[in-house]
Amino acid sequence: MKKMLEWAFLGISGAVLFAGCLTSKFKSQDETIVLRGNPTTGYTWTYNLDDDGIFSIEETVTYLGADGIVGAPSMFEYKLKSLEPGETRIKFVYSRPWLEDSVIESKSFAIKVAASGKIEIKEAE
View 1 (cartoon, rainbow, N blue to C red):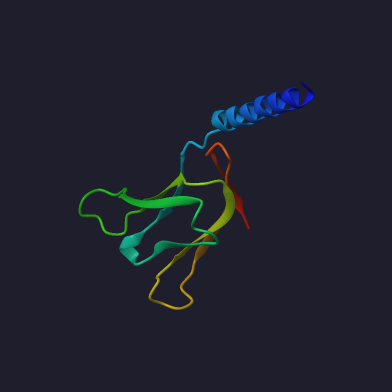
View 2: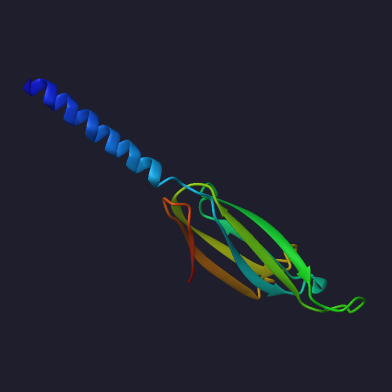
């Protein structure tokens, strides 16, 4: 009888643990980093990731000037979509990529993807 109760307890414990896993299911979420720039001058934002497995990234550039005006600013949007839990850093560099020593600005961000899929972005040094 004692062995039966032990097995029953283990079965219930396993079911509770399994149910707990189901309620904390990973759900992919999106966050966006927005940077301003002026690609008509040859400058653009590029980025490097420490670990590219925890989220995907998609770039969209929107021109903010009136038609026919050269030199107007643009908005660079980087949409991050969580893939799996983890932490990494992303560094953006604003430069003319074909010229050495043309970096005029850089920004770094610490990215954390929680077990739930939520993305947390903090500006870093």
